Image (cartoon, rainbow, N blue to C red; front, side, top):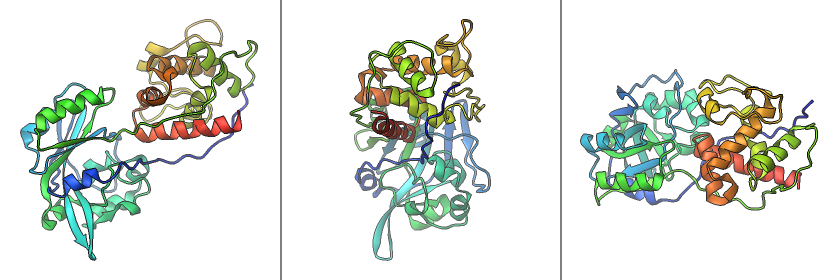
Length: 343
């Protein structure tokens, strides 16, 4: 029987990149008109009592001080790899003698773009829809955009005199973000700026096992170690351990998830058809629910993304596994804990 590794409590993490974005926002205002999703545009809604059906991870943040035109928003949304865009308003206001960078957003549309902990907090969105200014410190997971001090409903933003459509949030899972940034700059022109919101985390001192003894696997620890060694030489087993812990608490919750992911490593069936591996289990078709197949499959998928190279390549591979910056940060942080506990 596989023996569970210890459980580590996790929470969403937001990486602060500095104050460059607010300086650009200061000259503009936010009016969120619509969100473009794959398959067309949908009107923004403001009902505060219903959580978003899906979360959208903002990868890039484009700011144009004079405002983004509807044609530019449409052009950005049509770029290769872009799945969703959301135009927002923004600017700086003085509150009790202090200057704050504020975004004006339609609550329900923007809620889908917020980090998980913030999106799940119904109280925040009720306050926002009620006309309150919500500070970033009131949101457990922050707003996911560096340097933003507060958000307001679009109507409140207009009364504050914020500039409409000053910025665009861009979701582009799997895209080459460096190339996409250049394409977005070409659309918005020299007066605009584009920021990368995806954190790149440098990782050091993660143990790599090059020679794992063969034999009967008796624990999750053995499974993670041998899967890394055999299916992705150079990848630290601690990364697989962290993903297994976060995704299913080492097989305690095999899904299906709200997105339809299954098994201890939470593969979508479509992804499993590509990476499913007949690993250490019984010979036959790979079983998405069997950790003896699922963990080696995760190692293969990560390896194809460059995980064995470490550093930024490892971060990118983890990002490809689950498209969220906070997920990369949590995996690497937990991998570091495993490295300390099992040197």
